[in-house]
Length: 159
Length: 159
DNA sequence: TTTATATAGTTGTTTAAACAACTATATGCC
DNA sequence: GGCATATAGTTGTTTAAACAACTATATAAA
Image (cartoon, rainbow over all chains, first blue to last red):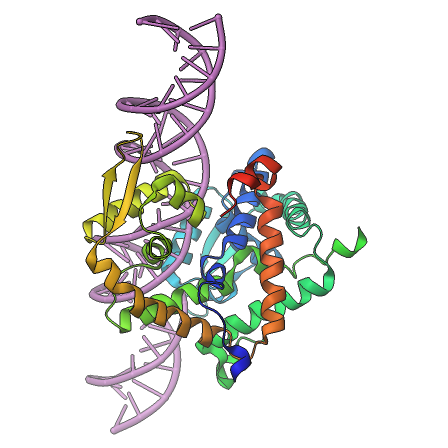
């Protein structure tokens, strides 16, 4: 497939990920200005709990593309901030279900507003068509590199 | 500009940067398999020194989109690995010029090969046209969020 | 029922990012 | 020359990522 060959050096930014770093940094800055005292990583966990409260830590791993130790520590820190609480599952005592506190629920509207605002800043001048293609490429890259590409794993990760 | 509006939630991956994380992780894995014992971050510094040896730490900051403390510590670690050495500039005693050692020079061919191989894995099935658009979008995002967008800063960052 | 294996989560360690505060040198201005 | 300011780099601290090694519980097989 000669159309997948490319010139060395040019694609370095795919590895460094400077664009997503810049977005994360800007969102963090916007949080700070609005006196929202959480990190982007913590927010990314809350984001999935806002979509569906009461996920297990493993489900948060899958949703956020992080490994188990990372989620353990993010949940540790979110618990310290009293934004979530761990509740041991009665069905399966290995599992912690993670629930939002009232404080965390109240953060949703404000921070989603800030996130959308940040994405609008980031994507100024970019057309919807370009965004769609960029998303497709990023998704293909992710799929190419992720073992969960196998049929069984895909059906499992269906959400 | 209604064409820059978008639906909430969909663009979350722009913030998490899961694709670039996956590429970095795969490259790290490929390094490890080839018994190349450096981190991707260290490699990204060497990458710029291979293009031009003898950069100052500040120039490495600009090239790698990192802040000064990050470069200080990456150079610290690269010095420990005997891959670079700091040489105080005679013209300006504030400046450290960073030079590659022989060991680092020898790493170039092998690791660039691994990097290209990794990018080929990552971009399998993605057309050159799609790659070009994705690169444009990422560059626009970066430019939108980077203060060095101002005319003065741009002329300064010309390289 | 006992044993092997898989799954969920935690802990330890190294590396790095981000930010604030700091030191040292250089430059511009009076 | 002396002072203010800018620039280059370092150090301290918190947060997080990655990986290995670990504990505890559940499941499957014998």
